[in-house]
Image 1: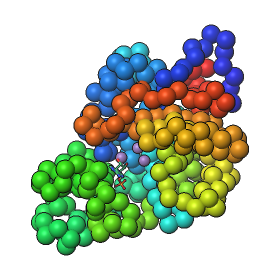
Image 2 (image 1 turned 90 degrees about the vertical axis):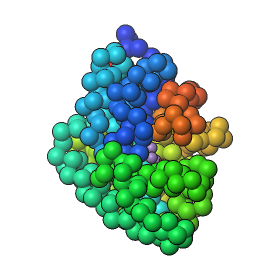
Image 3 (image 1 turned 120 degrees about the vertical axis):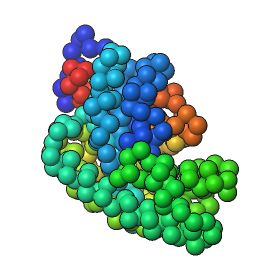
Image 4 (image 1 turned 90 degrees about the horizontal axis):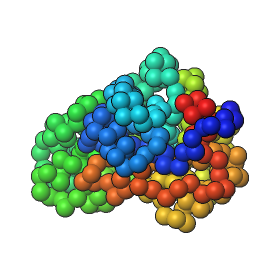
Length: 291
Ligand code: AMP
Ligand code: MN
Ligand code: MN
Ligand code: MN
């Protein structure tokens, strides 16, 4: 890890997890850059699901604002029968192994969304769910459950996206169809090949047993993973404390990101998060942009 030079600015308000309409966010990368800058973010990353098509616009818009930027992506991985999200940061977006890998992950999304749409239609009697959701996806290859949920809210059957997830789209609910993404090892290889740093996203969101969680952290570390999100939009203070402890136990760096998707849907805005605890090492100390 490169040591910080004495004149390096001390970054507190880093937001290294957010989504644009290149995945399931609702804003453009440029709009997000302005919002992050306006909210006092000092270091930003756009981390669309399995997609880096928004990176150029994000980096350029951030550059115009004088907002330090690192590349990002949130990769969907299958581990112990559940989906785990791995955020890759500060990688080379031109790396072809990473580009091909992400393309392969995205290719599975359309069929998965079709299968879920059929299950929702069976359960609700609605028609045209896939086409309706697809029309809401600016990037059709990156269609997500959030697009299905938004379409169902528009149809007036549900009060909110959260309501749709609770009743139909969360794991185990009638509209959910299990899907194999890629292995943890593959995702970590792509990120490493592209010179990036891998981060376990929102660790408290998974429903692992203690043993499975230990296996996740161990495998992640063994395959070169370097950090864990200690502060994220969906953590309680107790959860942040727990994962600060696990970061230290496993020798991992700590990351911080809102997971902002949309002004209407997200509870936590860009940059509007507690600071990292003092006893963990920020992942951004490894970024060359700050050296
Ligand atoms: P997918 O990658 O298609 O499985 O979609 C996952 C996305 O759905 C997440 O990144 C969130 O944006 C959204 N999501 C997952 N669970 C919920 C929930 N309970 N409420 C609202 N949005 C959710
Ligand atoms: Mn999402
Ligand atoms: Mn996620
Ligand atoms: Mn996310």
